[in-house]
Image 1 (spheres, one colour):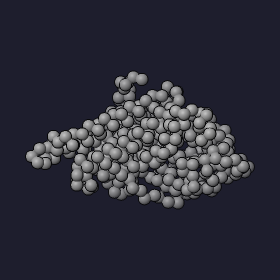
Image 2 (cartoon, rainbow, N blue to C red):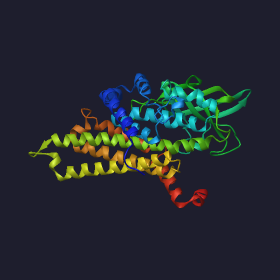
Image 3 (cartoon, rainbow, N blue to C red):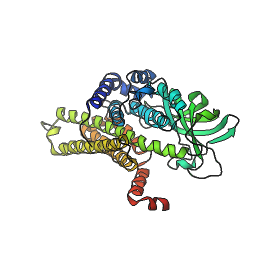
Image 4 (cartoon, rainbow, N blue to C red):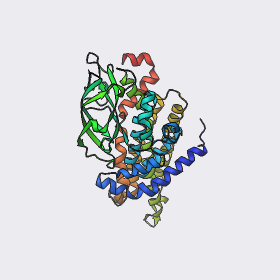
Length: 384
């Protein structure tokens, strides 16, 4: 692995950083307070090619590699984690699976509008009774003339309120259990109903919705083979975890930068608090762990770009980066003391935003299972 970014990667990183600093960071606190993200921001990202960074040019994307997309997610998440996850789910959990598993007609039809940011992509897998145990989902797709009648409910669907395209999973074989007998479908937002907008601890600028489905879905909306949707879901999460790990790095980096700047200005006992060893140790640990997490993230992205297996690497990156972000955003609050606990500084927002990275796209407990099964081998996985 070459640790030096290519000129194209640095250019994309700089573009994302510039946009984030000018168009996102100044408004992030207000969006957090108002629990809303203006859709115009996503349109602007689309116009810059940042909603389809790793989508080939023939499908209206920027034609960059997966690592370039990861760099974008980190930069956006540093400014506002809600924007970061909006783009991450749109790209790696909706656009890329259609690109990878869809037919030529589906790619031509659905990918270009997503890459241009004309609609926002969603990943509709989780249900009230099927979270970590995604194979227990009960949404049904019953065969009818010309397609399926899909009925059910999904929970915690990022981006659903923006309107766009949903990659939705439903059971097509009632006789099977767990992940068998599940298929994947491409739906439009007008085929589902928003039943709830979630009030969350953090990540308030992102849209998190419950949805209900009772719609006819035509035959040409089945993606991949019938009953093989669970494989698509798991492969999608393998890549999606890398994006969430990059989000965690971006959040932690934002907290570290605020803590570092504050420590150089705050005077206590006649000295900058940066002169005290206790604060120096905190800053050193923050810098070290952020760098370590980023290296894990970039390794996983590099493996994916090379077409190598990346399930274990992605799980390690997400597990370490998410737990690191939760720890180090808390340390940033500690560096700022009482100010860190107020909304005068953004570190309390970073702390709230960091926690979810340990939960969605696979909890930390699930990541440890993924890693354990990888290192113990397939025989152990089959018995588990």
